[in-house]
Length: 215
Image (cartoon, rainbow, N blue to C red; front, top):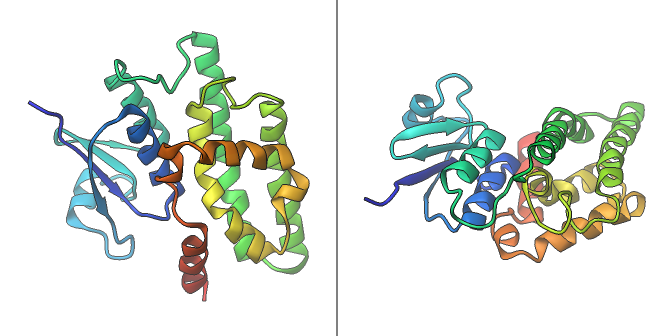
């Protein structure tokens, strides 16, 4: 019996994009169900009653919530499908989880300030945002990907925000590439992968959706 895989998602969600990439990397066929986060569906409320948010992966009727947990689940359940998304070495795997957790704890709240603040507060928000990304750029160093030569867990955790960079730059009136050229080179390298380019939302659509929401 084939696995039944359903993804409750929203196109512009950087967290949903992570799951799309992971499923693509593993070659898993799935049904995507776009969610309205204003009028939440009974299925979403049933499958994620605690947080009532996407993404939710439903595997053979059982829900898995939170994007990084879902990506790890996909890697474990379909471990025979190459590539491995997390390193096999325990120390390297712990390091990958640390940096993905850093992205989750630092990046989203900081980036959100760029379209919710103005004046001096916005300038401070931009510097905080660049500082967080600079830590990641330094961690990347001269490696092609965060884990070395292979695209993996940390790359998946961060690359989905790239579809929002145009929005950050437009609202904040600044250039990320000017400040962080190595990180943008890494993002462009990731975008050459079909699993990434097909999973990320169009940057202009993301901007228009957010602008309509903010206005």
